[in-house]
Image (cartoon, rainbow, N blue to C red; front, side, top):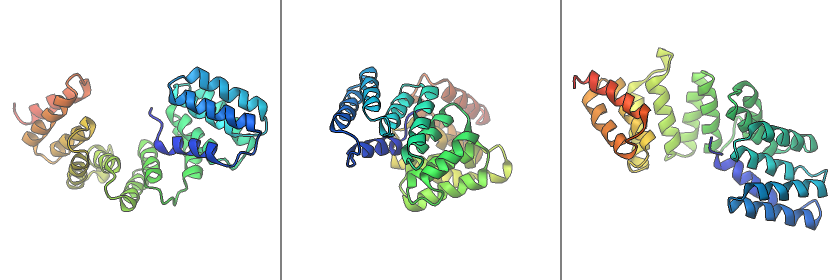
Length: 250
């Protein structure tokens, strides 16, 4: 999975603070971040490991290693580093957030949830934080809480395209009929597509699904045609188109 901006930002902030360790440790962290930015992950890991050896009581090298290991799709290794960071500093927001995303990557949502809630804050004023929690609740089929979080994200940032799209998808496809809302799905999906200027195929696919569940089958076919123009080889999008065309009698 892609690492959300919020965790990358936290990692960068950690290096911009007044350094509690030695100057050499600080320089190693900076060198590691430069190597990471240059797409040299092994070199970055080596710098972070050396920094951890120079400052064994500082959690930040471990938090940065965890964040990098997540990007390298090594969630088990990332978990070990984030756990060590949290042992060294139980209040580390970076470590809590990293553990949450690492467990989420592994599909262990039950373990991910408490870390994400503590790190992001259930009452956070960050739209991205609310959207991340909404996605987590939706994946756990806690639909009322997910809908509330999406709406909270949108109240904080009305032009948040991802939140519009994901809420639309929930309203259109929820496996619990009581939470389906085709009209709201169409409204939010339309807004997501407008905000991204019809350039995001996943969002256009959501709009097509919203038309489909609203009984507007011809509009679904027309919209999905635009999805496939952007992603013609996507098998899932092709399957959706077949379903829409069949419903439209084409």
